[in-house]
Length: 571
Image (cartoon, rainbow, N blue to C red; front, top):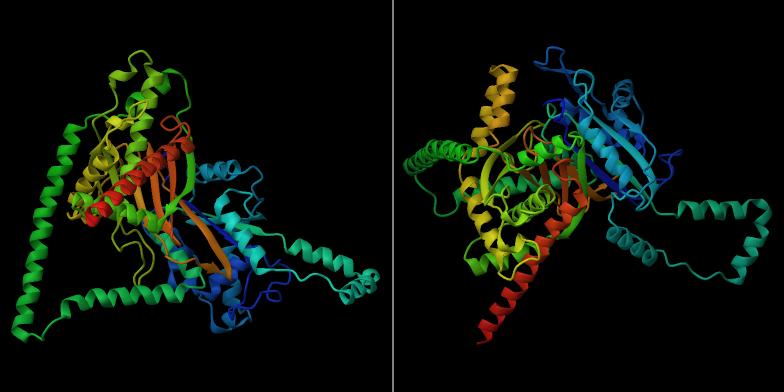
């Protein structure tokens, strides 16, 4: 962490709908002073205690000691059964009092997207005193769709569903008579109150935490324990673990001697993979360091300094990209045509690299408009950092949150023919995707993420702080962008019955890397977010449009390939 690059992952959850009790009935009596369609700090505290978060993840209730050597638990009490049943005991009250330091309510966002964007930038850039608290959440409530946290397409879908589910019966003569009788008894006021309560609302929970607490993927996985589906998610994780462990037990039963030999063979194979893979990873990292002596964005930064532009601040944007099924279909069609297994992550890394290339082209055209087409600063290849969660983006049973992140650097193709001004006619998007797939596959098969994790741990524990910062900054091999892929739950989650309509995470930029992209799947939708230095990406919305442009090109190429495959089958 540096003063310019705070190590503070930030994300938001956007909720809508009505609160419900545990049994699914509308929550009107449980929160007498809380309307049904907004989420408050009191709701957050109740969910925190009901889901037993202090016991599951005690680090949420910890701080870092003044010497910054170990964690100190801020309380040593845990909620008892009486707190869960509704009667708040002393320990629950102590935990709620401690939560007041972390959770607060704030004014909702008035200007669509811009207010939320500014608040996200402030949370990413402002320091978080780890000796006082490691995380915080700010909750705001307003009209549905007013903040931009929920996309307009989702807002339209929610309103359509509400209209379809609340068909109003036309008033009869008896109803009109009743209405006239109740006019003097507050009936009209009650109608007005009901009308106000029927207005669709949204609640935005804006989180940030210091990386000392945990990595961003682990934080989001831990906060899924707050959801009503928490038990179902844990059961799914345990089921997947059992399936994975049971793969090696298929087939006829082996003798004791053969089982021992089989385990020894697997152990030997793993040792060889780790030994040769580590050597190969170091050689490849050294090759990237030597062949990339300068970051392509260094020239952009120097030009910004000459022009007196501000070198601080963040450029931020987010959007829903496409349905997950559509993305998988595109990856399968192009992969089948190329004879490889292309993944969703491969596809969006390729799209992000294309956007980085177009950003560099735009900078060059502004810096040297006469000689712009010589492409002096746009490289043929771009180095990309890919973080990898060592637990697959989940928290395993009987584990708590922590830093379980590794990373590797890989080389991807830079400028291609269709990146030039005016576009091109050759199917370069598929060629870029194929090359990105090969590059990522080589690094994903190596132990590089595990090696980087343990080297980072060793450096943090035993080397001087300045040495560690220098090693971390040089280890990115002058990469232009870091692309993180977070796999969310495949169904829509709920907190107190309110649906989590959307979620978006924002990377804290590592020193030396000007752009960070998060690719996330949740409830069948792929979403993108970008966090960048303002001098590198002046318009983050345009950057995301470039990313989606490349995706649409791949979509068109996949449609053509699918048509060709169908025609070949008919022949």
